[in-house]
Length: 114
Image (cartoon, rainbow, N blue to C red; front, side, top):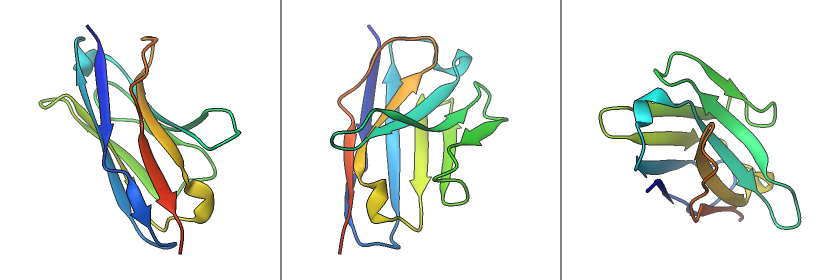
């Protein structure tokens, strides 16, 4: 069965960095575009970044462009989100998702606070 396991969240000060990971299993990872979403308390889930199946193309929400980088390792079925210059408004639970597969993992909490 499909599994997506996010990790790497934590508490960081404004201006700091976090690297999130998402380990995938149960489907042919290299055939799917992957996406990172986030959901802050009381808000709807927001698409943050997308990467194509081979990793050649990426796309970002305007709110994170220039600060976040999505990447993937198809040999190890893992997608990453490097988050730099973090702001308090980046605080949220972060989820990965395979486009076309309706499955959500437990997410990983990222908190940006001084």
